[in-house]
Length: 372
Ligand code: SAH
Image 1 (cartoon, protein in one colour):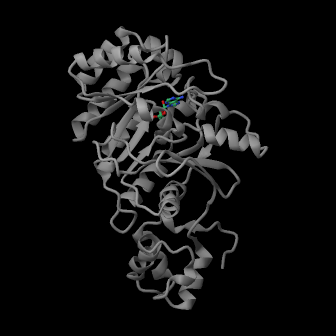
Image 2 (cartoon, rainbow, N blue to C red):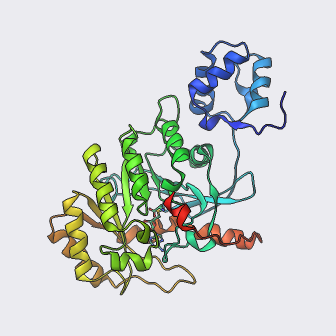
Image 3 (cartoon, helix red, strand yellow):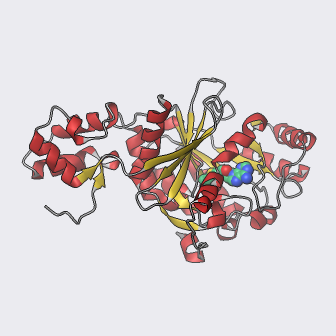
């Protein structure tokens, strides 16, 4: 036995990979299906509970695999509002996952739907000027199983299945593309978590080459773009990623996405007073959205401690929305839940890690890292 090799989580092991290991162990490959049923349908957390497997096989699995790698640390919020879950990873880092009871602005008007906002990295390297996640810098990518485990753990704690998943927690999912794609495969698979591809949204600050790669991914997932500026002038100021891939580059990548995928694109646009909330920005946003047949979600900015930005008043928010709508674009202003939804942006983690005395040296992305 190789006891030094790190154990692999079964939450991100593909059936064929598992079958290959079983064959190596002298077992029949069909056992893979049985094992994955214990993992995803019955959600057992111990190999001892896999009762249709022999004891030696259970022991052999235990030597190689794990079923959980993170522990639930804390929850904030109540059942009928947004709940933020804090998880401790096996290296002592923290990530957050946010459960939003309903997200009508994103997915129709059913109020019994549950949307889970998952993290893809510990911290974030992209340094968007308005975002709390970027304040502590980047620590590391999440593994595919750490992404899947957020859903599995929250479903257990909440006692309910999730209807929608959005990669709008901490991190830039397209900077961790292989792990994110593997996680999505497991989350979507019949043998896995079983969430429909159309109910999975990847959100990006605009990594144009990775958007092109994502467009080749066969599943019909959705894409949201954190636009937040409708001209390079505005976007350059608040999102350094725009210097690497300005709007023109982003636009070309999105054209490719739209040509390949059936779902509408979504532009997320946080309204920040005096930064991006002018009527001119609204018109540019409206024109861009119309050209790409994209929907627009306007989100009044949620104040972040230590950052100077704030949301415009409601009259200004309405005027902005109306101007976008005039371009013939489907636009929503997520006012009521704006505050809740913005809770998805790393604020909880920052506070918790400070409380626990975990200090991370901020690492900003170098140009090369941004180039991915
Ligand atoms: N990096 C990816 C995934 C994170 S998504 C992306 O940028 O899309 C998190 C969303 O919350 C983004 O749209 C982000 O711009 C937005 N956000 C960040 N800080 C916010 C704040 N203070 N108020 C409202 N929305 C915020």
